[in-house]
Image 1 (cartoon, rainbow, N blue to C red):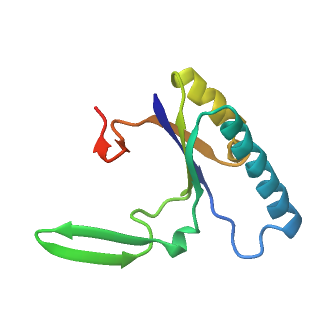
Image 2 (cartoon, rainbow, N blue to C red):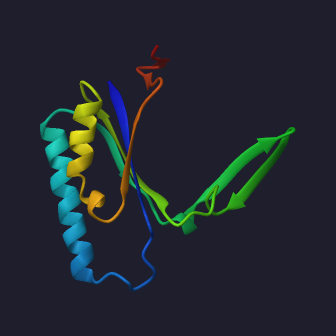
Image 3 (cartoon, helix red, strand yellow):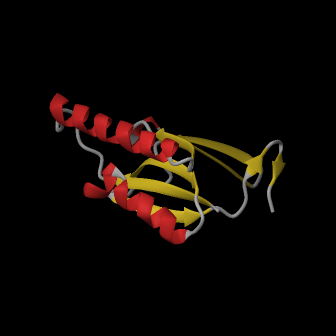
Length: 123
């Protein structure tokens, strides 16, 4: 079963994190990604640019609206996504627990409803 682990946490301000802290976080995510890959459960992973780099697109009543910034203003921003293929929710929670971001943010674990695989939507 496919699960998305969505990482949310307050974005640090410019200069709030030292180079040492950033290097430690990168090393932790590298180890986490390698563990997911070695276990054969990792389908994809992306850590996102800060919310300030976001562009939001909507189409209402035939009108296109392109807006700088995220869809909603929140204290915590979507910071990354890991897409896993694991047997069940318990396995997904087990991997979410090991995610480095769980120490400073929230990991939302959500099953996917369908997926576009090999040129077609799954049922």
